[in-house]
Length: 136
Image (cartoon, rainbow, N blue to C red):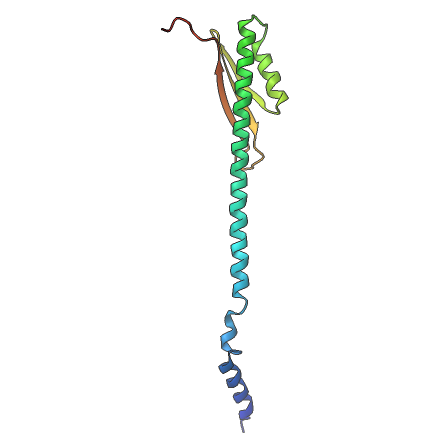
């Protein structure tokens, strides 16, 4: 003989939402965790992009300063204008990648670390020299 009281109890639970209706219990937690992960990923990407922009601005400023200093030293007859550019670059925790002198113009390329694994370095180039006076 089958004990119908067990079946009746299961049927009552199912009708009250404690049986099959509980299959989605906890799904809000999973969705919440996923939302937090997506927001954290976006914030990390924004922070990395900001770090690259800041490093680029720093490299641009150092390149401009190094190029002007080297051009001034060249104009005044200094021995090694690229040494001045190298000193300025190292004082700002950047690297002087190249320094070329063409006539009275100096072109420098500076590398600056970003701290971002995907784009570890940014490079900026700057040129300086006396203004030509023969242009009307």
